[in-house]
Structure formats: structure tokens, C-alpha cells
Image (tube, each protein chain N blue to C red):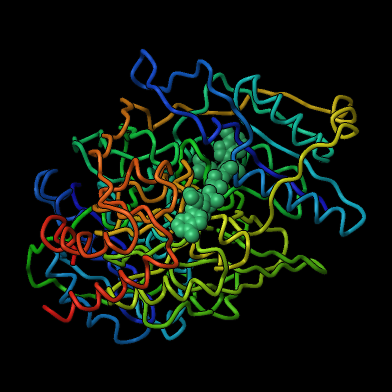
Length: 330
Length: 250
Ligand SMILES: Cc1cc2nc3c(=O)[nH]c(=O)nc-3n(C[C@H](O)[C@H](O)[C@H](O)COP(=O)(O)OP(=O)(O)OC[C@H]3O[C@@H](n4cnc5c(N)ncnc54)[C@H](O)[C@@H]3O)c2cc1C
Ligand SMILES: Nc1ncnc2c1ncn2[C@@H]1O[C@H](COP(=O)(O)O)[C@@H](O)[C@H]1O
């Protein structure tokens, strides 16, 4: 019973980045626990089974495609019921999901349905025994790393986006279509509208570069400077502090920190951000941190790899030009 | 309308943590505790709903040692009507175990709405609310940043990654509360006085043996010290060079 079940999430029919990471984490878990199979459930509108090839590249042995016209939007109750039904009939050592909006909705439901232990938001699997799995989970707003022992099967695990790299372990998966255990058109919570966010920008969890602005930008219109710097990088998302989202300068969805999004990009650029402990909680694991602040004593400089002391309203336009030139030089 | 809010007592977010001698818990000496952030927003949401409706009851539930009574009193001093402590010497790090104990209490309460925080500051798991809903066979709307209840129906806005979702549902339901919806009020002096006389029941939590247990805790490695590249626009060229050659992110 060392097989692993993975849920590979999609949005708008496309696989999300965390889906490949979850498959890859599942592959490594299966290999570490004696070479079981990785079964991946993917749900979406008809045609979504075509993603099997990608799932196979990251180590899926079996792809179970749940196709239904109503699965263009995420149907949490139907998908949770289908995952639970599959897990009950086949029996798995672990079920792996992404720690994303979808995974947060599915994991606890599965745990309750299967009476199975759950740990969400893991960053590492430390060891995998026949009865006990040990995993690492950042807690206390990332300020304490807890190693947890999970007893029993299936262990339900959700993986923090970007914490597990998707590595290739290619194979040609067997593809089966499966029927939903509940009608996806009959969800008790009806989605009436999906409001898409900023066009042409990656999500904060996926973006290799994040440019974030704080109260030091002084006024909402100055976020244009943040946007322009993000455009210069080309692959950047825009974030903000709670001071800024509370003012209504930016939507709450952009908030980074303890009570906002937790991010870990390759490069985090903090503009006019003081570096309050609750903000650091959401970004201190970024690979490289740049800070621009007019106060050389600002706590953000304690975590920043590179700092510039100066007025963001002057320095940012110059930085934008320089980044644009550097990009063109490539 | 009868609303239950489940709250957790957690360390203050300004705490500089130390690991306790057991290596499997934080050192609590000198640490301030309070209601967890998202749960405090949930209390505020419940109170505003009751005030808007002009009637109803807000009941606060917390599982934990006797120290949670202080946090329950705080919620009552904000305006909640009564409180229930599900007594347990330690709160297990097992979200499903906590959810089972809460569900056993909430099942017979006749609540129209049960509110939770999106995740607790300490465990940071986001498991308890949704798992409790599933155990109660109730519909559940997670991570809600706007909530409207009228005529036995709810509508809500949820923030997804890079998008938002508007949803509708009927009551009874479980809702977990996200950032952006409300900030908790401060208790008034009158509220603090009134809270002393409000009912606080305590009974043992029905906790089974936990299947998720803490093996060890550690503080994350400090970031290597950074440096100030320079001042003003004059430092931009050097910064870009470092991003290209040293950090290799450009
Ligand atoms: C329970 C709780 C949860 C919280 N959760 C979060 C969270 O998730 N995310 C979050 O961000 N915060 C959170 N906070 C709030 C946090 O404590 C800070 O208040 C907030 O992060 C400050 O935002 P800021 O850096 O934009 O503003 P400030 O702290 O006001 O800092 C502004 C900075 O800009 C600099 N500045 C001013 N003018 C200029 C200029 N012209 N050029 C350059 N620099 C300039 C100043 O020197 C200062 O350092 C939370 C707080 C609590 C209590
Ligand atoms: N011991 C507890 N007592 C009451 N409510 C709790 C408890 N633990 C968690 N909760 C609720 O569940 C939410 C999510 O917690 P968690 O799943 O641990 O992140 C919290 O914000 C609280 O609303």
C-alpha cells in the first residue's frame, strides 16, 4: 500500500504550477516508501485528459481524468467526494495536494471524509516509514519550523507552492477516465462569478519576481511606479503591505504577510516598506531581497540582501530604466 | 439568527520565539497570548451581523486549557452573548482531532452560521474550520473577504490566487474568515463589566488520541546579513550589476 494519490489542480483547463510540484512530491514519496505507483486525479472540462503527458513527465504512473462540462469552475464538493471514493476503494499511503485555494478546500474535507490525519502546508518530507511519516511545516507565521509525525494511512499532505521543485521522472502514464462521485453541477455553494485579477501578470505564488509597495509610496497613484518596475522585469507580480491594502490603495488580494499571501520568489523588491514582523512573515524566505527605503534604520534592511537608502519616488524610476536596459542587453 | 464563532488562543504575532527545553514546544515564558487574528475578525463579523439584524445570539467556542477562559471573556466583552470552553490541557497539533471535538459540541447547538478564522497563527494550517463543516455535513465557504446574509441565504466573496470568486449558499453554513472583511473592535469598559456576568460553560473536550504529533521545533536559519549598496539614484547601477552578477536574478 505504498501507492500515492495526487490531486493535480487546474484553472481554466490549464494545470497550475503547484500541480506539477505535487506530482513530483508524490513521486519522491512513492520512491522513498518502496517504489509504489503515483496515481494522479485531474479534473476539468472535457479535454483535460490531454494534460496526462505533462503529469507523466513529473512521474505519474496512472492519470485518472475526471471530465465534466461543469468542471470549468472548481467544484469542491464533487472533487472531494471523487477523491474520497477513489481513496476508499484503492487504498493509498498518502494523498498529496497543493497548499493553494483549491487544496485548502479539499484537504480538510478529505481528512474528515476518510477519517485520515492531515498536515497542510508542508515544505519537506523528512522520512517515510510504513506507519509514520515525518514532515516539516512552518508555523507561527513562518517563525518556527515544526517537524510533525503523522501516524496512519492515508496521510493527507498539502505542499507549499515552490517548496518542492518539479523534477522530471518521465514515463507514459495509463490514462483512465473516471466518473464524479457527486454531480459537479449540484454544488451546494454556487459560484456566480469569477473575477479575474490583473491581466498579464503571474500570480504571487508563481511569479519569479515580486515588486511590493508600502506606505512609503505616499499615494495610490504612485503605485504606477511599482507597476512599471514590475513591467520592466517582465515576469513580475505586484504585492503590497497591509498598511496599503487597509488604505484601499491596492486590493486585499495583493497583501503579503502573516495575514496575507506567503511568497517565496527568486527576487523580492520592497519599496517604501518598513519591514514589520508581520510583513516579513510572508516574504522572508524569498531568495534575494532588495529594499529601497529612505530610513536607513528601517528593519527591512536587516533581511535585505541589497539595500538602497533613498526616496522611492526618485530611485524607482531610475531602477526601472536600468532594469529595462539590462533586459534588452541580454 | 444564532451564530457560533470558534476562536483559538495564540501567541501575539510580535513574539520573538524561543524553543522550550522539551524541544517540542515554544518557550511560553513571557509570551503574550490573545485571540488569533482571523478568529478575531470572525467575532467582529458575527457581532456586526447581530447588530444589523437587531436580534440573535453570538456564542463563542474555544478548545484549550483554562487560560482560554480569559480569551472567551474578551470575546464577550466585545459583545458576544455567551461562551463555551472545551477543556483540554493541551491543544493537539492535529486539526482533525480538534475539529471532531468542536463538531461534537456544535452539532446540537442549532446554529444558522458557524464562523472560523481562515487559519490560526500558531498552527497555520487552515484545517479546523473546513474539517468541522464536513463532519457536520454543512456547506462550507472558505477564505471569505466579504459576507452578506439575508433571508436565510448567504453571498460571499473569496480571494483565490490572482482571482476572486463570488458565491451563494443557503444556511446553515460554515464560513472561514479571511483578511479584508473587518478589524476587531476594542472592548469598551461597559462591555468588560458586562462580560463578567455573562455565562461561560466549561466541559471536557472529546479528543481522541492525536495522530499528528510534534517531534521537534526549530527556528528557521537567519538570513545572511545583507548590505546597503548606496544612497539615492547613484546606487542604481551598482544594484543592477549585483542582481546580474552576484544574485543572478536579472
Ligand atoms: C495581527 C496583525 C497582522 C498583520 N498582518 C500583516 C500582513 O499580513 N502584511 C503586512 O504587510 N502587514 C501586516 N500587519 C501590519 C504591520 O504590522 C505593519 O503595520 C505594516 O506592514 C506596515 O506597512 P508599511 O511598511 O507599508 O508602512 P510603514 O510601517 O508606515 O512603513 C513605511 C516605510 O516607508 C518608508 N518611507 C516613507 N517615505 C518614503 C519615501 N519617500 N521613500 C522611501 N521610503 C519611504 C518609511 O521609512 C517606512 O519605513 C499586521 C499587523 C497585525 C497586528
Ligand atoms: N483550539 C481551538 N478552539 C477553537 N477554535 C479553534 C481551535 N483551533 C482552531 N480553531 C479555529 O479554526 C481556525 C483555523 O485553525 P487551523 O486549522 O489550526 O489553522 C482558527 O482560526 C479558529 O477559528
